[in-house]
Image (cartoon, rainbow, N blue to C red; front, side, top):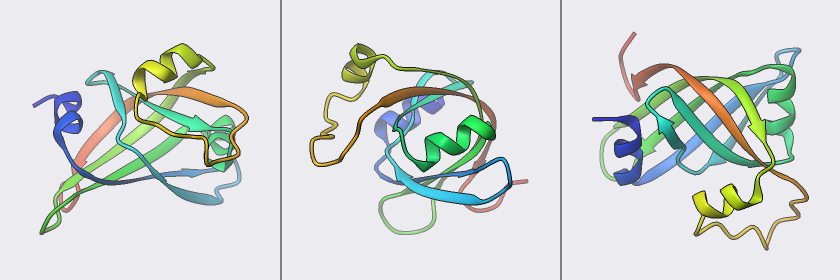
Length: 124
């Protein structure tokens, strides 16, 4: 099953972890990623700490825990490859997003190369 198909159907919670250029770690709750193909994931992100960290360190990890009983899900190891400010694309991708309750000045579409995929528990 492709990653896009998996995440289109999966319900659950996700956390994106980043670190700045000095190695100080941040973790933030994020919605499921969107996929251009199985090797390219994208996230919509506001101009906050996660986005700032990616400007000095392109590596990130996304942990997704499926809803329900047990410990199933995925771990994605990612490397930022580009970003853009593209409100029409953000609107198309994020039809249900409501940013009105947040003080968000700038939003970005951030593209990642998927370096490795592991199950939530176990694997390499």
